[in-house]
Image (cartoon, rainbow, N blue to C red; front, side, top):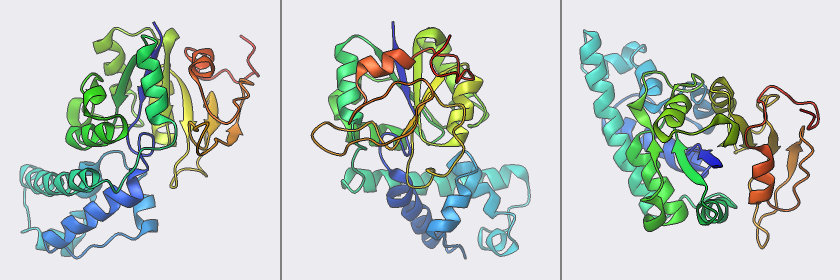
Length: 267
């Protein structure tokens, strides 16, 4: 049985610039923290997998540490970060509910077609589960979203680029890596997927287009929509040659391809 595993941020929706960044900055303002991330600042923070992990780095700044009440122990620091992150998640989900983050081209079409064809569809992300479920529902609708398993947040102890979340998804859904394809948008996500032995299609986002995706099976600007935004192929080592949009036939050809083998489709 063929399976598709989607990352969330940058894949289901271009959430980083229009969702997570303003939510982080609103949280800093809410708690009186002397921090505001610019678009470029946040691009650098994205090298760190996980929102809590990004927030935790702020406590290394003495001014932020004092504004946070000078948490003295690791437990105190973790509690402060958890409080910030809960507030940030609420702000982000409110933004999603307000419709400010539309799904990326082709996401609804591919997920709908895959489910109709009997494929397994899942989401594996480092973001908080409420945030992921909100983005997923915005992309495919509440009814379809409820049928899709989500593995997110602190479900694993180590975030991408560690492969733990993909290994867990494979285990929990009893998936065969030879029939599974991941859709990612970042190098950290790609490394996590190939670390779990999974072939990966990269749909680059605004923050990730210039990253190194050498190990990907295919790199495109989006999944594409025949009647809307057409995809642009950035790298096609398996010679799939998609036209305008990726369909299930294209994705089935890539599922299970050895992640490190880029010899033009030769097995």
